[in-house]
Length: 101
Image (cartoon, rainbow, N blue to C red):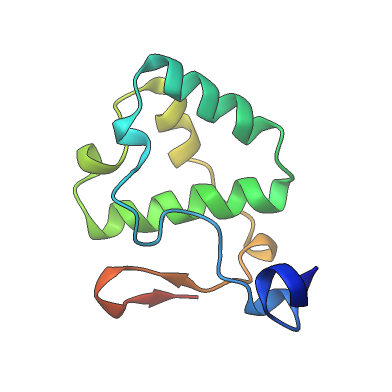
């Protein structure tokens, strides 16, 4: 799967999941979109869930929070999660060439 789908030899070479360069973020969500996002996030493995939350936290460091996420208690709770470092063995590319590891 790594070679065929991701075009890499080892898992650590896969780019981290998330919103690296997208202009579409949870801030674009209306109530039903937030419901769906939270439901889908809840069924993901912890590694993926942590990586997605982390990518949002990084995105907010680079941009105004209100442009990235809606002011919603469920989203705010996610953003306050301390992600587990063991799930962050990816590269997170951001606009303007910035890379987080």
